[in-house]
Amino acid sequence: MEPEELKTGEYLKGIVQNLPEGPGIYQYLNAEGTIIYVGKAKNLKRRVYSYFSKEHEPGKTRVLVSKIADIRYIVVNTEEDALLLENNLIKKYKPRYNVLLKDDKTYPSICVQNEYFPRVFKTRKVIRNGSSYYGPYSHVPSMYALLDLIKHLYPLRTCHLSLTPENIRSGKFNVCLEYHIKNCAGPCIGLQSHDEYMKNIGEIKEILKGNTQEISRTLLQQMQELATDLKFEEAHILKKKYELVESYRAKSEVVSSVLHNIDVFSIEEDGEKSAFINYLHITNGAINQAFTFEYKKKLNETKEELLSLGIIEMRERYKSLSHEIIIPFDLEMELTDVIFTIPQRGDKKKLLDLSLLNVKQYKADRMKQSEKLNPEQRSMRLMKEIQQELHLEKPPLHIECFDNSNIQGTDAVAACVVFKKAKPSKNDYRKYNIKTVVGADDYASMKEVVKRRYQRAIEEETALPDLVITDGGKGQMESVRQALEEIGVNIPIAGLAKDRKHRTSELLFGFPPQTIGLKQGTPLFRLLEQIQDEVHRFAITFHRDKRSKRQVASALDEIKGIGEKTKSLLLKEFKSVKRIREASEAELTAVIGEAKTKVINDYFNAPTIGK
Figure 1 (spheres, rainbow, N blue to C red):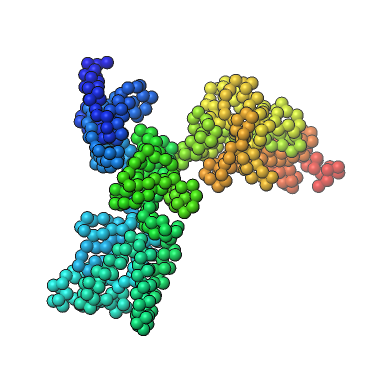
Figure 2 (spheres, one colour):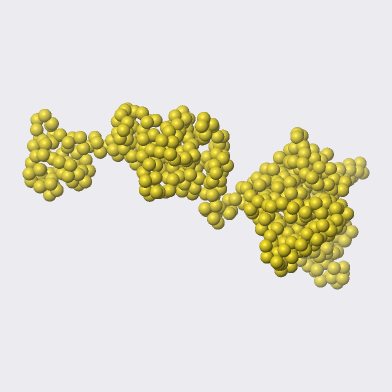
């Protein structure tokens, strides 16, 4: 160890030994003084000591520890304070070894503008000027439905005029079309008072918060009072508004309205790279806020660590004061006056399932977007899926699949197709005539071909596949296993079986073979189906060609004086025996000469053959 490293090690050891045993935040800095990691701890001393007390496995954690040149820490009162501070510091400094919040998709919100006569409109920009923002709305139709409800309930201005009391009194404005079609009550010329307008804005804010139940109750009460006073026209106007609110509530309410002011969180991982977290806020049984975001992993963080960070981020961002949080699994985190619930059934389970549905859809959308930009990413994902399903040591970037074809043992052939990175590699396809097997014995034919292929691969020192697939079930797999064992090659073997309708039905793996459950219609299932269809097509095509050539050539084989070279010339020129028979003497002479033309004509014109 270098003297400088020894000095640094002693310096860090001194800091660790003097750390307090309470909750707090620790920051690791590199030699340049840059913060490279921020973490939280219930017990600062124990947590930081764990980084230096053992030899870490090769990977990012070991690299992180090797780069630590200094440690800073902040003592806090509670674990909740530590969670909040950790989240804020990660966002502020974006340390290299902390998770990265990928928040690049801007969902629209509804803004109630901070002005004398506030406007209500959709926006994607949040400007801190005293305006109120509601959302964001990941499901844009829901936002438009809400804006439409507000438009029909309350007359609001949509103009950009500076409606100050002075400007209105001076009479510098005129009403516009919106006033004439009764969408605006004319505050610009003093036809609607500021108090009446702001009363409407107050009710609009309650609707945007999700408190439609209270608005509905108020409208019903006012309607009944007007009806009692025999003011039926005014009561009818309120009745229309009441029906609009009730209609909106019926569409927006996903669970019982008893469930109020609840946060819901779920998480879905994408291997070792990313995690996606969905957040729903429930008000009176309806989703009032919905947002999904991505964390890029840096140190193989657990789902529990990432979800804890996500909960703090979302609650802080949307100023949530919910006293209940629904989560999919237990978390070692405590928040003041908050109950964590892991529902097993009922309306709360329905909300959790809805959150999971949202996060899975978001993950699928992101994967589609990234695969469009990088098609090879899709191939690697499929390879990793096969690796996980079959518990292989590495992704099967090179797959070979075999199939046999014969009719009652005649013209027996086999074929091998090759897929590299989930794409057909047609230059590597191979056809085989069965040499050692007599009759229809598919298992023996498979064993012969596999043995021939990989024996040659060993002799020529060409690359062996990462996975061998047979077009067939357990018997074919056993034939491949025996062939590989006899030549001393160890390659994982899988089998693809078809159902009675000749459709890909199941994947087999292992000895004894076990059925691997594959969901039909998934990209992985379609890849395996493509491999099976391709090897079957290739084998059948080769078999037909061989059978056709044998049948076509058989008529010429009986002609004495016509050898292989002459037959090849004739078939190349005329394509079939029928055309050779119908060709004129001049056409035949041009290809094979007069002597051989006479031999052919004598044969075809002989009485036993017929014309």
